[in-house]
Length: 114
Length: 109
Image (cartoon, rainbow over all chains, first blue to last red; front, side, top):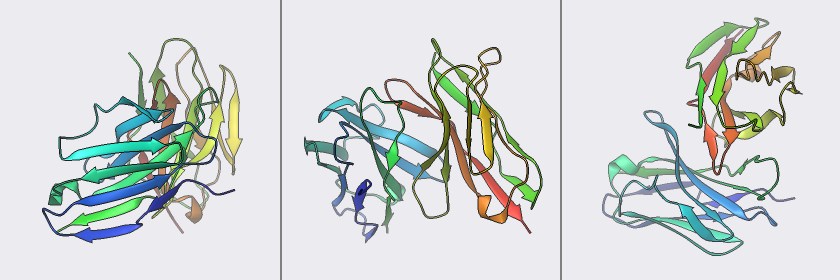
């Protein structure tokens, strides 16, 4: 079975450019999470969705960040405009509501903003 | 409140040494508890879990016992290997999963 699929795996861009990260959760999962990981701040929850509806976006750093989940099998995290401090690894994870709470993580998208 | 506190590293051990990484939690009730592991360049993956008090989770030689009297879920392994070098996260589900800060483990030959 396919796990959580993220793309791109690596992205290098220049400050001011728009960045779009994509995630396909595991089929049948109905809860999706976006995390950011840096050496300085560790693993931070940015936003999560239940049944495609954003439930808590309090971790989104500022208005430059936005996330959507147009259907059960796809989500995007967009940064516009990007800044060097956004450089991090962004993880998507999914789970099925009502199960044990185990999260299944993608392999991450490593973003470098020059 | 609801939180997870874990021993912060980095931790460096020699091969075959004994490992303990402490984790304590605050919670209403008795939630499931998890340990995740993140190998270099990869995402987090579940290492073991315990779904109720007094349960012991185990996998790959690692163990953790859910102790409600001390609200702890310490991770242990009797003999670590170089391949165990990774970052370990204690976690508990709430309306969203709450992760500890992670403990980096390096095992040297």
